[in-house]
Amino acid sequence: MKQLIFFALINLSSIFYCQSQNQQAMKMNAGIITDKIQETKEFYTKNLGFGISFENEFYLLLHTPNNSAQLSFLLPNHPTQQPLFQPSFQGKGMYLTIEVDDVDAIYAEIKSKQIPIKIDIRDEPWGDRHFAIQDPNGIGIDIVTYSAPQ
Image 1: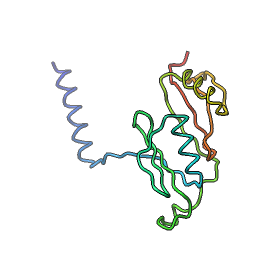
Image 2: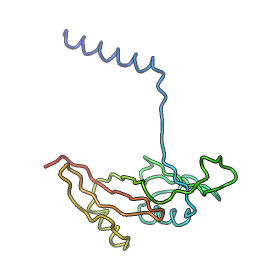
Image 3: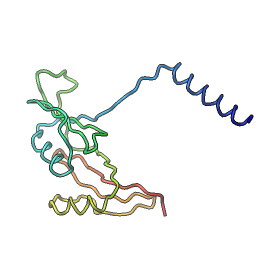
Image 4: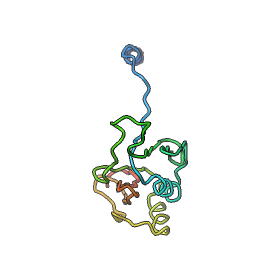
């Protein structure tokens, strides 16, 4: 009984601590500035099953098939955007990781669509089984199923 009371007190103190810190809920999506919005839209929707959450003449917001994450694309140098959001992504230094339940099935599907594989499917000593492709903007996409190391 003493252990149960101790456990309850610890849980209550953590709840009060979190509430006292005024933590805000956050949701994040990555944004890429590119002039290849149409090619990007076709790549993600046709090859990876992403859906379109919103689009207009200068902005595209995509979501993963289960709607758990979003990815946005913006035309460079658009007059509605501030200078911070003007320069175009230069195609290097960024990657995305997409976790899937069955990486082998996705790998077979991607190969059947004749999408170039940049890193062939492989098992890593830390437990990942993955392969990589590249989107029209030069962004590496690592498609992975996580498992315990063997």
